[in-house]
Every structure is written in structure tokens, then in C-alpha cells.
Amino acid sequence: RWGPSPGATSRRQPSTPTDRLIAHAIDIDRALKGVDELYEAEVQPLEQVLLRYRNDQVLARRVATALVREGHRAGIKPDVLLAVLLVENPWIEPKARSPVGARGLMQVMPGHRGNWKACPGNLDDIESNICYGAQIFRDYLRQTGNVETALLRYNGCVKGTNTPNCDLYPQQVFA
Image (cartoon, rainbow, N blue to C red):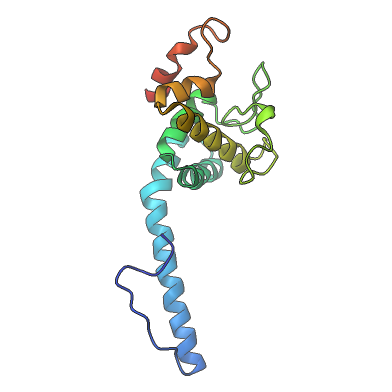
């Protein structure tokens, strides 16, 4: 995604410092256009949804950006991660704690800390917490091969032993 533009051809090295500076400026402009396109196509729609739940532009952008980055890294659609986050933490409260000890936006259990090298250890950090949530869901999806079953596992739903009506969790996420 961040490599050479489609159809780009190799070009001769500019000969003067001015030519090199112009070539560098063109490369930077091209990269910035790619960032703008990614923002408009993927980050901004998630950001707009988050703003309906919590009116904090800076937080919404940070969360949306992390959802897109970690979704791509885990091979999960960012809007699926957003749906999980909104069921787990509709207040968009990064430092949230559940009665059983789950933490952060994605309500990650502390026992998961350190299980994925890609994710830093602080579960209260927005980006780290979303990283863990994405990796946990990805692993459950790989193990089960089924989105609904992976969602039930993410929620810790074991028939008859956990949260009442936890079997409804996938429908809440899909809604």
C-alpha cells in the first residue's frame, strides 16, 4: 500500500540538488495523497461512528486510526473491531475496568498481556489495547473458523457459567 504508485516507472536520479529536492517533494506529495485517501476511506467513517458515542474528536481519531492499523495487521475488517469495541465499551472509556478485571476499550483480560510481540504491554494504552483485542479475536477466528464462535470466545461465553445471555453477544456485535 505504501510502495511505488501503480504504473510508476523507475526514473533517472536527478542530477542537481534542486532536481533532487523537487523529486523528493513530489514523492512526499504522493505519499501524503495516499495518507489522505486512507483517512477518507477507512479512518474517517469509523471516527464518525465513534463521535456518536463520545463527543471527543481527538479520542475518536486516535481510536479509529488504531482500529484501522490493527485491523489491517490482524487481517480483520476494522469495522468488525469497531463493533466489538462498541459492545465491550460503548462509553469509549480507555481506562474502563470490568468487574472481572477486563481492561480498556476492547476489555482485554490481563492474562493476555505479553502473548503477542506486536502489542506493547500497557493495556490502558489505546493503541496497545486495540492491538490485543485484534490479535485475540484473530486467534479465536483462526481456531474456530467461525465468526460467531470466535465472538463468543472473545466474550468469554461458556454455556451456563458466565454472563447471563452471553450467547446473544454475536447478535449485539452484528447489530
